[in-house]
Image 1: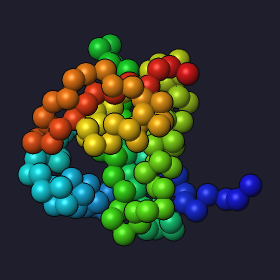
Image 2: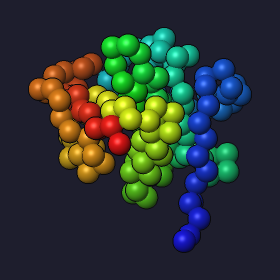
Image 3: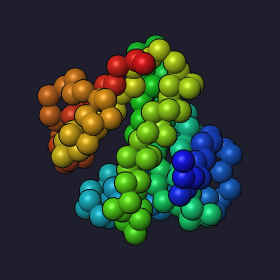
Image 4: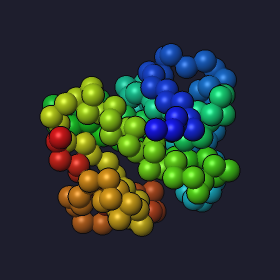
Length: 152
């Protein structure tokens, strides 16, 4: 078995150094606001309640996602899934999602996992066991579909 070409890091917002936090937020803004031409409040006030999963190559940020802890109304959720544009084409999106799913299952066993997928990625998330649970809707001008992965 070959070693992973990346390191997995999961931490709360308070555990980030200023430099690491800057890198993660910059990646998210670069992908969701600049690349997707979608002006929306990336800093939405939810990061302090979430865990943040990163894939790293040394100190180089390859990809990141945030994991919402469950609450009485919702199971754990995965969001803000972003892969650095310079590292795309290396199946890092799939690796990132597999790590995020594993983290959710470790922390919250026997619970389903939800996400809000950009609709053009429904097939991708479907390949990871997620199923659509809503009609398509617009979020910040981009078509989305709510999806759920059954509890393991």
